[in-house]
Image (cartoon, rainbow, N blue to C red; front, side, top):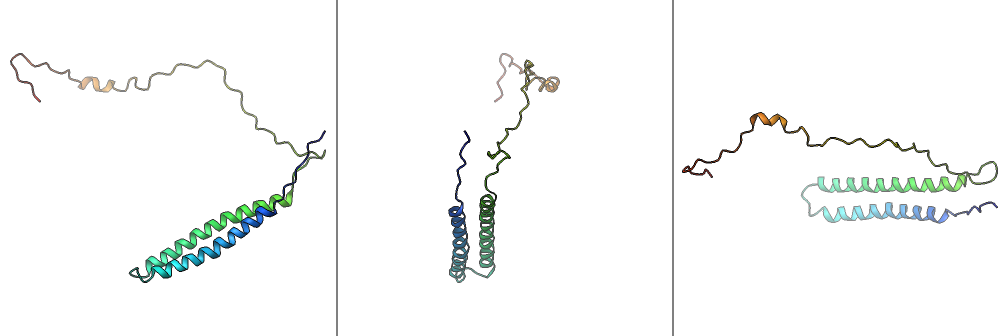
Length: 138
């Protein structure tokens, strides 16, 4: 009894990512230019408008790069198809071998605060109790 290999069509996801890239790029540029044109009369000087256009284009470029990477992964997955072994069965994914846990008993660890204030013992002065009839300092 052989497990049945299910074929998944990757056409729709690839088309959807392509459409999103197109609308994001063209719509993003249109909104960016419209926003810059609206902002230009209000802002003093040209530098903030140019910076806004530049940063907007960088953001659109980065998002397009990520979407293009996903698109190429989908296209490559659809072109290569499922990997099969010589017997015609899909290749089994081998689990990584983990090292056997140590069964030695745990050794008790010393306290974190142990020996941390010993260097102050020479400078420590015990509080002096006031003598009868002496005023307490506050």
